[in-house]
Image (cartoon, rainbow, N blue to C red; front, side):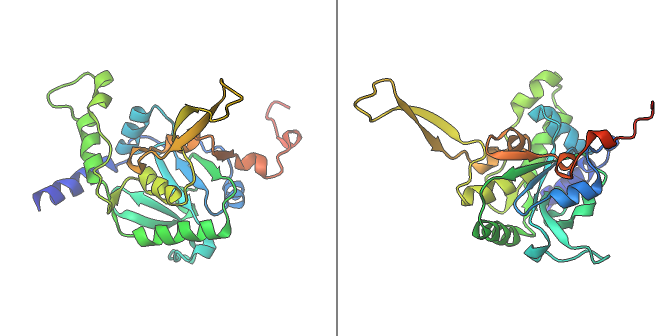
Length: 251
């Protein structure tokens, strides 16, 4: 009971906003129009935990959500807007959201290539089966060790003290929840790649690559951005961008 109380208090503290939202890089209409089911939406957060994650991963991105679209049947908001995103929230656990929740936020869209309708259905079924599961609070306590080092530890050494994830299958952070869904499809994110000698007797110097799955608990939001298997979608360019139409103030 005491641990649960401490976890809730710590989660509330880490969820407090500490910075303003960064300038978004696309319009709301362009973002809404460009998204497809299966896209991973990366978010530059503005809370205490966001600052810690961005520092630890040396990345702009502190959060990730999975876009499944209105056809996934994730429910609706009070204003009848469909819920189209699934994410792992620090306080509420795995939940669904309307896209407008991130309307004024700096985001990046990472798109897996070649998913079938069956793949999308499996992603949706997996996500729905995880709704209500809790955020990995061991991860939160690890982040607290970064924020409140006791005994005092120089900032440059704090990240070495952390070990992400508890290994509990009913708990996840935002990126590990999404990574596990893609790994169930055998879709690569950042796999471990080994180079082995080729079996071709006519080519002594030939090699081939063998992939091995990284455990989903090791993934962070930046990995979807860094992955060579996710296409970066820039909504402004997808929406018939024409630089000649820009209204420059110095004309």
